Length: 76
Image (cartoon, rainbow, N blue to C red):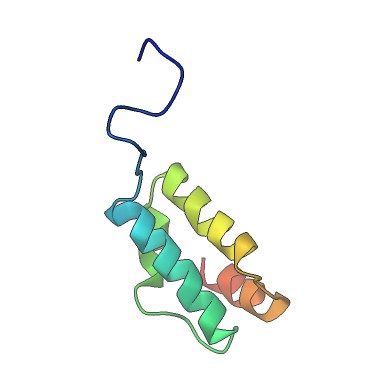
């Protein structure tokens, strides 16, 4: 804490169940390519804003297309 460098354990890991759920939902939407909705998609509506950001960033980084975005818009 008082020196420049990594934390004492080596590498920080911010992965938790909320991050995993957001990434999994985004990847499910991408895999379905707008053809249908993934199961449990309505859970998104109860997520805090930081979890939604993880979902959106995963869509951006995953190469989301117009068909998928149209389906997400209709669902959420």
